[in-house]
Length: 151
Ligand code: NI
Image 1 (cartoon, helix red, strand yellow):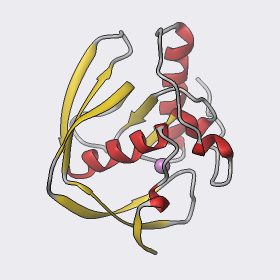
Image 2 (spheres, rainbow, N blue to C red):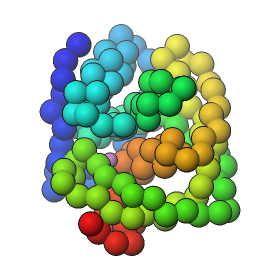
Image 3 (cartoon, rainbow, N blue to C red):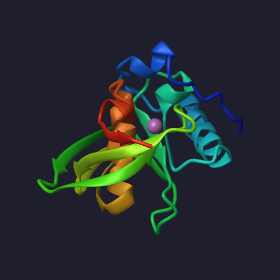
Image 4 (cartoon, rainbow, N blue to C red):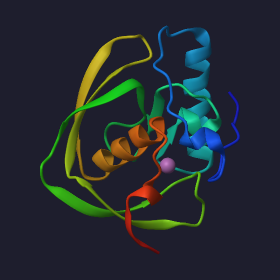
């Protein structure tokens, strides 16, 4: 495994829409492993492939809850709560910055796991927050685009 270089604000790759994964290969699995290692080393609770310069729809998340490491390939948020809540966010690509962002309180996300099997996850709290933040990365969106108040 290897720790990858995390791209920082200003790098155009962070503003580029990532492409769907069409085939899960050994390279995909290696990327997932390296992304997890990079996230834990940072340390962080989520990392999207564009943040390591790879324009593929791949996300890893670990908010230190009972789910442990979550790997999402081609994630799609299929349901959003109508209730929106404000939470503090930060980003490994924007070190030293955090801010309050309003987002739906819970979401349902559909994705493929590393075996190519589709699964669905309903998440609330900090996990719902992390999922929405990371899926935004796949679309070139950063939390600073949505921030209410910077801190
Ligand atoms: Ni981020």
